[in-house]
Length: 173
Image (spheres, rainbow, N blue to C red):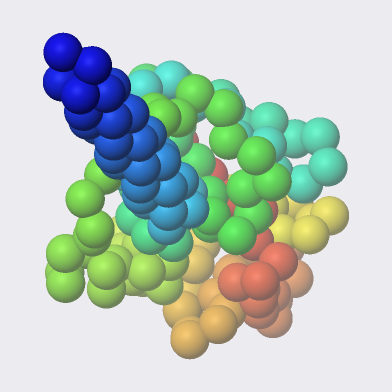
C-alpha cells in the first residue's frame, strides 16, 4: 500500500508539473500573439463601432469607424461628413475591439493612403486638409508618392503641396 500511494503521489506531482508547463506555454504564446497585433488590424476588426481618434495634441475626431486599412481610418463624423485619418497621425484611438482582424489580403494591403486620396482627387471633392498646424480647404489636384497638391478654393493660385507625413486628417462633406 505504501508503494502505491507513493507512486500515485509522484504521478500527481508530475501531472501537476506538466499542467503548469502547458499553462506557461499557453500564456507565452498568447503574449507573443498580442505582441504581433497592429493598430491597423485592431481598427479593421472595429469597423462599425463608434471611435475617438486623437490627432495632433488635442484634436479629437469622433464618429463611427466605417472603413480601415493598414495605413488609414475612415470615420463618419456625421451622416454626410467623413474624416480620413492616416494611422501615423493617430496619437491614440478609443473604442477599438480588443481582438484583431485577420491579416489584410493582397488587394487590401495595396489600398494605401495615396489610393484613397487619388479617389478624392478623381471625384473633385472639396476637402478640408489638416496638416501640421495648417487647416486648408480646396480640391486635391494631384497625388504623388509622398504628397498631395491642393488647389485652395478662393486661395492662392499656386496652391499647396502637402506632405503625407504632416497629414492629420482629410475631411469631406
